[in-house]
Length: 323
Image 1 (cartoon, rainbow, N blue to C red):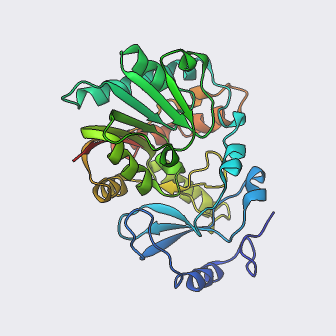
Image 2: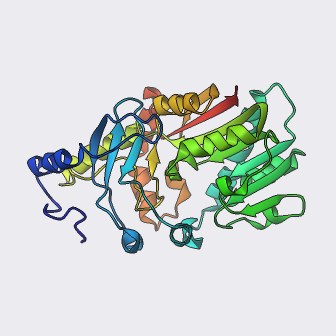
């Protein structure tokens, strides 16, 4: 296994890990969300074989002491071509019939939630990082002018129908007209961006006055992550971060909780109109019984149920309103 920190054994003890931190803490490290230079170490990132060819630096995962945003340092500098290799066809696994149906239901519920928090008619709808295009299909069915953008094209056939626009690019370089969209939708996108602030600033520019942005992100303060930290400590992985996994599926390079969501809204001139802590219930049903994920998530079902009571479920969604 590759040792990303020369001079330290992969299973280094606490003293060596603290020494590594001392060597790095005086570098010019700042939080990508709030620019604070105060941070805490959470450990080294895990790396899968698929990412090894793209690793050019010695990385660690940091938590901002000011806003609790989780980020990777040094900043990841993958090219578009390298990201495309990671987010290829294999990024979207085979889904069970239940999972396919549930994703359609989820898209409908989210657009219902958006509409219930808007006091204006939504006409122009943009899905940033549209993936398979389920939200595009739902928006189109409501008579909204639906447009999607993504660096890879993984759309299902219904999302390719005439009338649904698609741009194979990133948001920043696309330069949409200012004050054009009523609503932007970003489900499971912000955690994949090395500069999430830049994306929200751009969305602020292209949204009409009082326009809204829906964001859905994993909750790094979830009970699941707390349990994962305990398991890492018990299995000799104390130096591995239990938070974001920038170099393993699903390649999250940033991590949010409620505090950091509120902060990123503030620094990009949005108002937080609503937030909701939620999770995909009965996660094991996403997998076939023959898959490892089925038994893993079935075993963790009590954790998911307890998280509901403690309000530490695995995801957050928020609706941001342009001020």
